[in-house]
Length: 637
Image 1 (cartoon, rainbow, N blue to C red):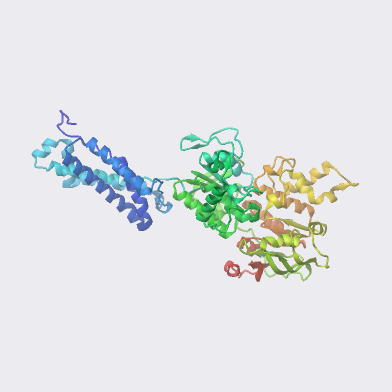
Image 2: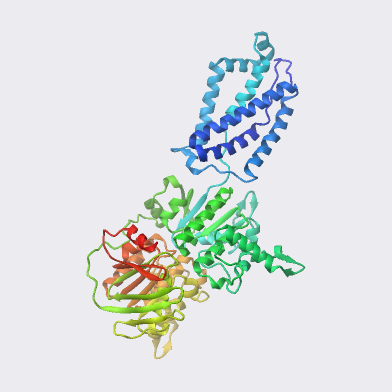
């Protein structure tokens, strides 16, 4: 529109927003291949081309700049959708900041000062400014108005090319805290497992109102829980599509073949092709069932994926698969809430880290700010050193043998296993998750079906069943605590007292007061967060469930303790307490078999380490300050 007072033409450019979007996409993609150079140069080139097109079309068609740029913006937006296939594009965290300063701020400052310099100190800038102020005067001074209008469009879009934004959400928002701090409760309310008392969860402007996990899925939220989240008796496919069978149902009849086919396609796409969608879920072990849960939680591309300490149930291979899926969720522009007690894992995977303590958010820090000591201090409210592990070396192991296994075989799990456990020794057993080590604990405790070979005490007494083991002061804490170590739908008190009932009898009768005192003593000794020992175990967090398991056997005062993944899902404070407890037990003459997938745990706590591979012992190492993690790894793979 021409102004009568200033006789100038105002050029309106309505394609700026479309330019920013397209430039952002091109900048993100270019940064992957060319780093910071691509991040800066690519959007400038994009903006320049858009500006040239706008200016040329406007000059040639002689119609309103408003109409021209509105029409062209639709083309640029279409190019954006075509380029991304309709998905969000995320700028890698590596390029979101330069040092301590956001890249967006730096580029905005560069654009501002460059624009000011050109307009004030260059011929192009002065001519462009003159046309904008009074086109007629500029023309009378010999300025090529048409040429510099094109230049004006080009300069404007050139600078807006730098004004790109980071599309998408944080890769991973991590929540950490002590056991019972409220992490799982918070995410359980988000995903409909628990119902909140107050407050709201808002996702993309809409409140999440899920009352169960299926509803949460339909609202774009999914969760992978710490313990087993699949249902026994159902097939793999039925577990994956549980609550969503309608898509395979017509006239009330389920098309099982179609459901199995779709489930298998999903499993294959995740690289889990060895899992058969038609088989009953019970045919698979703990880790494979967890992999099925990963597919179940993510095949529909949720906007928010909650991973609640799921890595504690997985070996190294399983963890790698989970992290791939988390990155896939990130790459589609969605977000992950990742709960973990593994400090190194937290720092490696995080974008932002929030710390809860006693149900209250203590603070949030970025990945760049995070250090192990800082996170530990935030979690427990005080500094915790790195002295988790034993510091002694060279102590002589007793020659007294308290347990011996000869030619122990469990088909498909263990083959001709031979080992001896000495009095006052911590014997570590390690390997990759599927090496057979978790079956060893069951076999020694008399809990394996179809076990061959012999397990005997030092005096030759055979151990052929669980009652035999408990009778002769052997304790066992399984990795799968919900299904093999705890009576979930019973109280904390009854769970702790269970193996000690004979010792708690008075004149052949059990007294409620004695049982409660006994349970309270050992629950508090393990710092279990609870409302009381009458609380049901099912209401506890994963870490506090583990404390109940350990409290049970500490109370039983067993002489030989088999611990399978003893610190799985345990926070840093209690982990240190457990290691100290194990060391005290060792010094008092008790013997411990510690089965662990954590190499540093084996190196830090064991007197002797057996490494298993393919169901057999593949290496044996004595405690030594020179022993390295690579020594163990070489025998695992």
